[in-house]
Length: 250
Image (cartoon, rainbow, N blue to C red):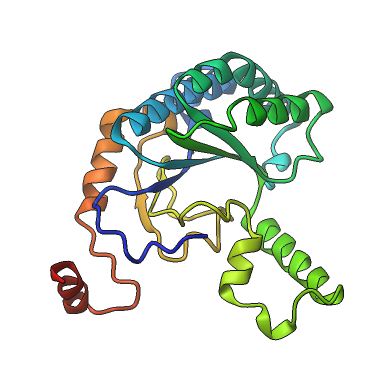
């Protein structure tokens, strides 16, 4: 996974978002939670379009965590159906807009139908280059790091890798999305101030932006506000502020 340290542009290359608040948005309007999730899909569409317009290279959305299976079975079933219907409706439009769709997370728990749609959508959009749209579904940071460690341990057991060669770069390369830059900007809607087991390794030096807005309320204008906040951050990566300014002038 590429390092962000030499980024000169004030625009993030990779944005990661926890889309929180669909259920609360619906409840505040005395509507079923299903309506909130459907409105959340509209926000996804708006943000994807905004990222294309602004030249953002990658967008990772936390759609369903490995812990979300603990929710009521009716809501989980609804979310799975929404995944299926959204993929069927949106993949052609994403393809026309040169968006590459990718999924990270453990797929085994999904239905055969959903797994098939995921694979088909990835294959259909594999050659697109305008935006890398990554959907984290049945994903957890602990799962990601554990899976990477197991893969590296197996390589050691097979004699392909020495234990002393398990470096930070080696671990990063075994995680999900090793070809993408680390997220520069993390956004969480819904008022919570935590990262909830999302991209734990990858967010080590990411700028964290929290908003009280519920996800169905988030649009291109709100993304602009997050990008303006990001542009005014000084990203030091362990250096002093003076060093960063000297590097900018070099």
